[in-house]
Structures are given as structure tokens and as C-alpha cells.
Length: 160
Image 1 (cartoon, rainbow, N blue to C red):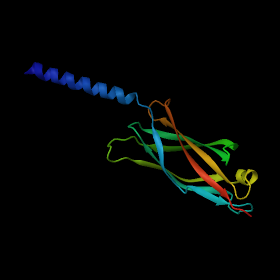
Image 2: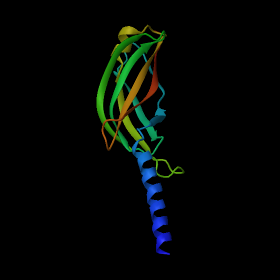
Image 3: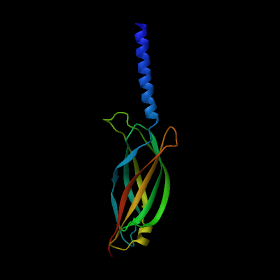
Image 4: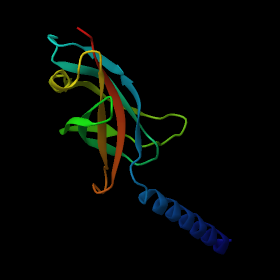
């Protein structure tokens, strides 16, 4: 009986160690699932000098805990040409990994302000621009494994 219990214990230990090895090899994997608002309207002479993104919501796609360490933004015109950036800001947002597949935690960033001066200086009235927001996440335990997720934010210049 003792031999069977010892053998069963070794099998369970082997399976548990193999499972742990696989989860240690995972890299962070996050995605943006919601951005509010999706776009901003402005015009020349506008008294508001920055577009405000109220919330950006993130979820993890695997079990790796990570944190977002910085946000990089770039402005593009309608033809896809870069006209401002890249510029970056250091932030810290913890993104918890998936523990239970039926209950995924969300993480949020509130009140991101994007300057409108580059749009006023480079975009004609009646045209639009788009801002590429790139969020760079690093795993919490090793600090050397990165993931990047992106989202587009639109800006429209009202005709005069």
C-alpha cells in the first residue's frame, strides 16, 4: 500500500512541476478591450487644448501578472504619415493575470490627456488625424518580458 501511495505522490508531483514549468515560460499578453471616447472633435481657436480619454480598459489573455510601465503616442494624418511623435509618458497600472477563465479582471487607466496643438498646426479644417496609443507592459516577476498593445484614437478638425 505504501508503494502505491509513494508512486501516486510522485506522479502528482511530476504533473504539478510540469504544469508550473509551462506557466513560468509564459510572457505577458494583454489587450485593450474598451476606450471611451473613441474620438475627439476640435477646431482652430478651440479653448480646450487637450483631448481627454476618460477610460482605457485592459484585460490579460493568460495567467501572467504584469504592469503597464509606459504609454507612447504618435499622431498620423489621413494618408498615414507621421507628423508628431513618438512621445511617451511613464505610468504604472497593474494587470492581473487570469486565474479563473469565467471571471477575468479588468484594469483601467483614467483621464489621459493628448495635446491638440500638433493637430492644429498640421491638419487642415475638415480633415482628421489619428493617434496611435501604444501601451508597453512588463511581467511582474522577471521584469524582462514585454508585451505591447495598441489602440487608435481619432481627432477631427471642424471646418471653419
